[in-house]
Length: 514
Figure 1: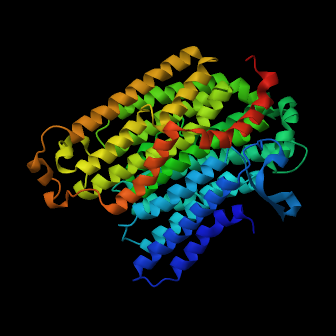
Figure 2: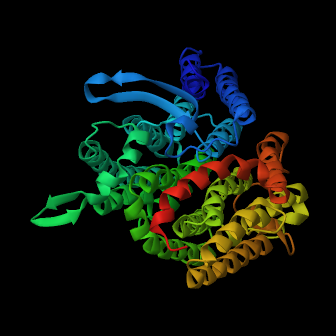
Figure 3: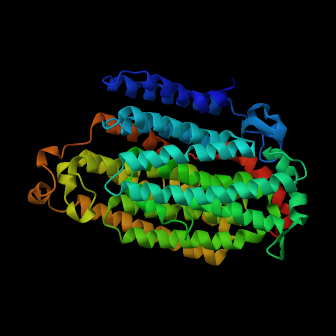
């Protein structure tokens, strides 16, 4: 068994350990989950250290690394095919790190702990599998595996409206999955290869470009129709306006750790799917759709920022800010320039670390005050100075302060997109200003000014309003270090991606005028 199989399926070992642990041994369950996710982190570090930066990837089977390939369902030419390149390796690192930290974010969970940890570890396997799968059928199975545990994690361990939020999440995601399944079957049969091997399907791009499909008496271009079906499936996950409405509800009701995973990893799967599958398999349709994708990115940026500014619930504010920041990923992807694509991929990684910090600091204050209403706070810096420092750092990272990681990725996106979409880029720049406005305004309202003890006593006992503790700092510190280091020296991640991005762009050079 190769390292990619191990890093994907080792959480299942954790599930077995937890299922056979006596119900009253909750500490053993937690440490078992922490142990297997820590092994994932060690394997992710091994992959990073041994990754060959010079290898390309994307549409060349020989350029993928740590490859594992064997026949699985031979009757339909389905393979167990794993491998990583510069597009997927940063996401593997991010998934392993956030899964490990989220076990400690979940440390206070007492209700149904065995079920919670089992569902979380199953979710972990699904997420990791999506980023390492190179067979479309296998990719789809991992994509679907995530749906069930996330539904239960929100629906059982969530807030007062958890059932509504879980069902809404399930229905939206299921719709996207059905459309993706239709597109997957269309590519399987139309390629003439009768395979789900992603590399082989990429080699059939010319066949897809010239194929047509008869639908309801109309003759439609096959590649454009498949691109739209795949795009809707991936766009729901991002989420792209107008498919975004499930996200704020899911975030508000989900436990803190699940909000971290939802924003830190699951949203990235949508944009990852477009770059991994739609772009190399359907290049003509990708270029045809790029202007609309850029427009949707700008809408996400500005609409998400304006909605965030209107929120009083901290979780809703960060949820809408995620919609806004994922707009930069879409804008960079639409530009088809080295800076734009690198910036988009780097933003995916950076947003994962920063939004994780933001949701963790929200969870810290919610555990103490038992509410997230911004207007009901005030003067927290007088009472919780250390917590104020951590929250301020997370907020400054979120607004893209120079010297922190998101500044680099957003700058690359704007540099890369300005060549192709100057008006879109200028509008996107206003989103950065709006982001600074709502985050600084929130910081001012919550932390500065006089501390009114009577106001806090209306919602919780003042004795509960204690400083951030060591376990909570442990979950924030690694993320803060990454944000700071990559803000000063981003090359450890950019070097991972550069060869794969270069090879991806060679597909589009004959199709583009820039």
